[in-house]
Image (cartoon, rainbow, N blue to C red):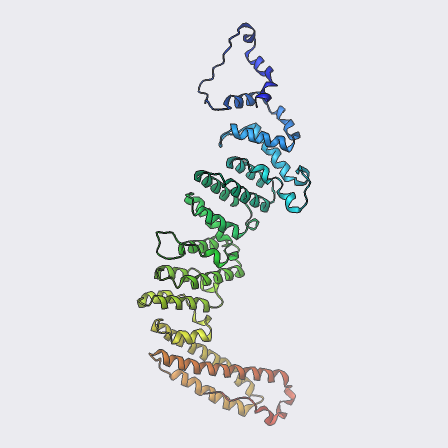
Length: 464
């Protein structure tokens, strides 16, 4: 910088005028001037360089621009604004925006062509990196390339950085990532950053920004990412509160364009997480209930995995009162449980007795609806063909329906299990019967219906 100033002595000569010729001991006093290294050179540079003289910076080589950046970094504070710095940054980012032209080396691969400048900028402090990246984003430089550079910078600077410097680097990095397109960085990268900042004392504001970024990509996460150990102050094994915040962030980020496919993936991920944490004996009922209720009913096509997690939790926490059990089980939709799950639930003594009764009522309602559909089909079809057989089958169906309606709800789970098996048998037979009738209706011409005779009597009897 001193060599640069030496080439512009005329500016000082004009400033002091005739005084330089009349006195040998000329002194210039600067009041309230901070006595910092390089401070005078900075003031002199601002005085000597005007806007017109900075136009030549655009013709500097890449190496000359880097040297100038380093000198500005040594002289300027984080909040300082300099015409020289802005001009140099503009030239640097312009070179980065035209990578092929700007590259000072012969690149052997696409990755090298894109990232050749990474190492050159690693020597800059985080404040200057912040300025470079923000200007790069405004120039539409590829966001994926920017995110890769930020990760490279973090790994490089952490080798020698102090804890305070590490916090500063991570906070700036999180701010910059929040400005990028969400598809430009992976969910794995975000969880890697989360693990790093977990051991640092970054601000709660930046932690919240990071969690929102992770939440926006939660449908791309895996169960391993979510198994984050809880803090030492917590008795339970995994950080359940983190998962709850991530799911809520997922809803907030995607509230305007949340696809069903993304919601299904998050639901599957949460169910896997529930199965993992359900065996934790220190996990409180309130926390587990918050987890099972964090997603709406329509997020899951099947509730079997949810039932599995609840079953495990109730097995481990055998001393829960009925009210707490009912709160947890309120997340279950019995219509979305498989037959095997319903059977297991009905004879499981760990579940509240009221749950078993609700399952029975649900199955009875499904059976009645199925009977109504099947008997309607039988009545319609019997007017033209299979009259005698249809009447017999309808009588059997009515008998089964009357029997089902007359059943008194038992108080014991084993009786429910037997009745559920009987209803399942009836449902299976009815579905087979319906399928055969639909096939016959489609294959038999109406003009030949009367000619079938006894050939139509192969349809099975309903089990009662």
